[in-house]
Each structure stands twice: as structure tokens, then as C-alpha cells.
Image 1 (tube, rainbow, N blue to C red):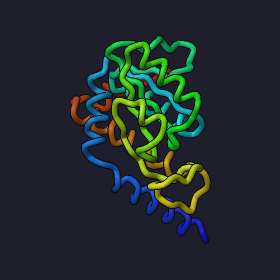
Image 2: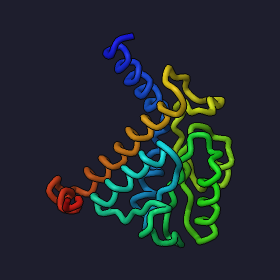
Image 3: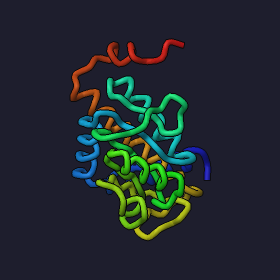
Image 4: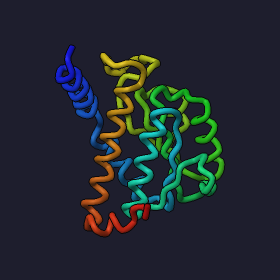
Length: 184
């Protein structure tokens, strides 16, 4: 396989997974994020890295967002939404954070690769992204890539699609968004 074939394999896999995402689930996720008092993000590994890019752009778009575990992160509470990302839905730290956020009054919005797992069972809602994970669970897309690469790539595209909707629907200009970007 050469570079072009490799890139086309990735793009094909990502497109196939994104095409399977339920539009109603995506709309409910958009609504949860845009109507929450504050949005909190949790995950592990590459999924967390991708979710952090979502939180960063939410802040640029004027949405109050924080990443669990960061030194300046406040405690979630009533009116807040925790976006809990775990492809397998079994990541121990994500489950603990989700349970604590629920106890504090926050709503839990899971993003996972399968419908039936511990995270989705405790969540108030789900955005299903059926990309392959290291668990290779039932219902996940098959992938030529190792581990959870496909889930994380599709996650990034979908979260950026939500950010684009926020950008378009709020009518902000690129200059307004840039003004909230960091100064260094």
C-alpha cells in the first residue's frame, strides 16, 4: 500500500462511519451542548485529546466549557452537561467521573461506539459513533487501522461538525471567534 492508498482507506472508513451517525442523536447532542449552563469533557487517551479540541473550540465560540482533570476545572452541577467519551463505554476513569457528575446534578451525554455498555446505561443520552475501537465490539465498523484510530477520527469530524453548526447558527464572524483565541 502506498501513501495515497493509505489516505484513501482512512477517508473511506471515516466517511462510512460518519454516514451511520443518527441525525436525531447529533441534533440532541447539539441541543445539550448549546443549552447547558456549562459543558464538561471527560475521556482517556486519544479520545480525550480529540474531546479537548472540542472544548477548546466551544470556548472560542462562546460556550462555557472545561476539561475534567485540568487544574482550573470547576465542579459540575445542576444545569451542566458532562460529555463522556469512551469508545468501549467501559473506561474506568470515565465511569467514575460520570457517576460523580451525576451525583452533583449534571446530565451525562455519552459518546461511544456501541449502544450497550456501562457508560451508555448511566447516561441521559448517547451520540453513537460506530467506529472501530480496540475492543472490536459488536456493531463497531471494521477497520484496517489499529486500536481506536477510526473511532477517534470519526469523533473529531463529528465534534467539528457540531462546532460548525454552532458557528453558523449563532451568526458569529470568524473575527469574533478569533478574538476568543489565545493570545500567544
